[in-house]
Length: 115
Length: 116
Image (cartoon, rainbow over all chains, first blue to last red; front, side):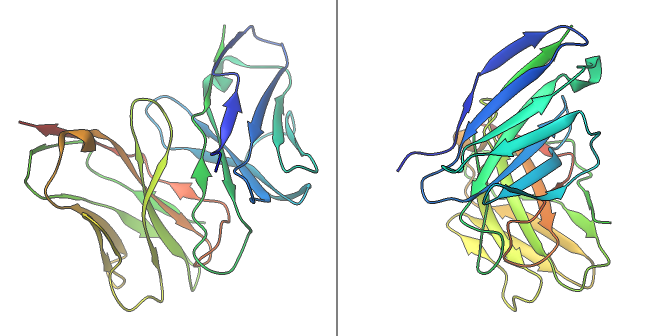
């Protein structure tokens, strides 16, 4: 069973640029959540996708957008990058959104640096 | 809104000793889930243990147990027989309903260092 994978591992961008981060969910999982973790902080929820539809969004501006594909992999897009967007971006997948004990399985993250 | 507070930025424990990591929470939701995750320096969040707000008994998973005190709104993690490999950041988190993979709210974490 393949776990959650993310690409790229590291990324350096300049202010104003756009970036796309990718996540492949664990086999059999149809729900993907994205989190931003600034240095020294806990992860903050960006949004969640369930069966290709956005299913909840945190307190992030519209320049943070996402997609989920039919194979349940997902992308996080960030436009007009700002210095404060520098963080570890974590993707987590789960087998559904409700019922039972549904811990989220996290990928290794993408470390984004904005210069 | 939900809030998780972890007041211990860093903790030291000797190998083979037990350690308790504190977590208090605040929510207006009638039911919720509580989680603990471990984050090694590699960055990946590793699930450790889960407690639903209506669960009568405290959760246990191997060397991990969750000391759930609902009236005090606390969900402390107890690690027994610490090992060097337990050195990592530990995060307490909660969800809006028990047993769901809904948005998780995390605390700021506690860095645990296990010494010889």
